[in-house]
Length: 132
Image (tube, rainbow, N blue to C red):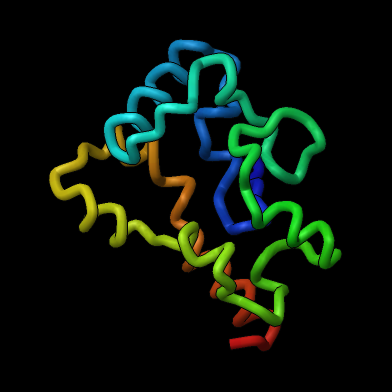
């Protein structure tokens, strides 16, 4: 599958919320509850087409998506306000999650967190744009 970068730098193509398989989405929901305490997600409402699409969204409260759309930019890497207060809590890398959850299995990391490692992606885009 081709890389699909969300407006915040998340990798939508790696996210199990895009899966048609309810068992995969159930494992994702259980993992997000276990690691992040998210109680709002269910197998039904975690379905997501990615924030670049106009379809289903798992995180309907995200402040980044409407901001990026309003500014008419591709993603947060293009923004002059990088890293803003909306983006800051979403910024992460593999090390951040591995430190926060020592002993996490590779399977759990890949299912529940790998897609969120946005900081290196956004900084690479900014570097290519000459903004860093």
